[in-house]
Amino acid sequence: MGLLDFLKKFFKKNKKIGLGLYGSPNSGKTTLANTISRDWMGKELGSASNVPHETRKVLKEEKVKIKQDGKELDFDIIDTPGISTKIDYHNFLEYGLDEEEAKERAKEATKGIIEAIKWMEDVTGVLLVIDSTTDPLTQTNLTIIGHLEARNIPFIIVANKIDMENANADRIASVFPQHKIVSISALNGENIEELYTTMFKKFN
Image (cartoon, rainbow, N blue to C red):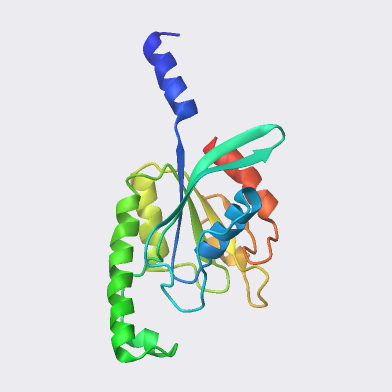
């Protein structure tokens, strides 16, 4: 093995993993980030909410270590704001915000989306979180996957909220059969161990 090949392998092996959590608003990204952080760091990363775009700034937890079968996976969790193709302040009025608050929320959400997209330049792996109670064939999901494929960023599709009565993870699998999909409930931790195992295989 030549020196150049050795250096490439060395830096690939020791490259820090920036794990980005992407998806539509309310898909459960922050809940999942909190579960991972709580499992391995003993603390939560951010606050989850039923109101769309609760996360409007990138949240980051550094030096998270997942251990499994004597191995370690070291990474930074990067919880990004939910990505939407359209933001209308009227949508926030349904959640009890007044007009001024709703307009401010919409403005912050727009900035958050721009920030999330910019972070794609820095992440080295992604968990694409999809709400399994909704139709997965959306412009948002297709756009995110397109960006990840164009940048050759490895990713896992996380079919979240399988604890819900109307969940249908099989529908996600049928829409994206060429991609690895793990079905979980980030809220109660169901199947979270399978996700960790898949992360080891995909990102190590």
